[in-house]
Image (cartoon, rainbow, N blue to C red; front, side):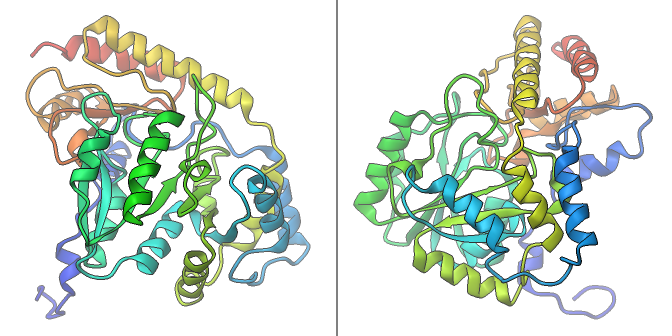
Length: 370
């Protein structure tokens, strides 16, 4: 019971405040910080996408859409899947976060287990705990790949699903086709649902993007426009996968989100036809810049294949001790333990101007020694 006399649910106390948001709030209090903390593109939503949403508003498309989403966006997305992943049931969601929420509600009972990569996107762990499920971690350290034998060893009769994030937040790892095929074989033997978080799929720098859905039918694909088109505040995503699962998610959406924002959905139709390769190429350059800078400074780090994150090892102390010293020097990065059960690394987001990245490299070069 808190000071007001309100008795809160137990799940409140098993859910931590986001460590990312703590740094985000801190950034607002600092003068001219070197902000390499938040995973938000540094470019703006394309004008043609903005115009499509504005036109939808002016044309009176401001009411609820169907729970499943507006027909135009659903048709465009289904066309993009057919032939590659096979026919899919599809639901327009309130971003990937909404899709994750609905998927966990539809799949997991209290006490069920879900396999989560370590390191992981923060929501995977917290959502599981919120609904009384148990996150079980499959270790991808130190090179951010999956130990297939180790993965199979942690599967139990309670294992219902696995989350696969590729390209990964926070490591930037991209799983190759051979790795995904091997994971699919394990899942198929045990009848486990794959939840494939593909929000960063446009940002693959060294190889084409591959989805585990190409090798495993029992896959729920989650995607959206927050990262690819800088539409973070529009809250627009989609879920595509097995009919029974997506229909269950649709049922829960009726009583939670109702539908994704209508004007954002019409913007999404235009986003489907908008070339973002210029920004992808710019982020490949930023990836190369931050990686080279860290290697030259002496950091132990794997080169990320995608997304816009890199996860170097803290050169001394725990991740939190090192990040505290970074913040003292006006450099905002995130302790790796926000995304992991380990305290060894720290996350850099290079979704920033080149000059900001250069300033960050300079500070990190000075801090590598105590």
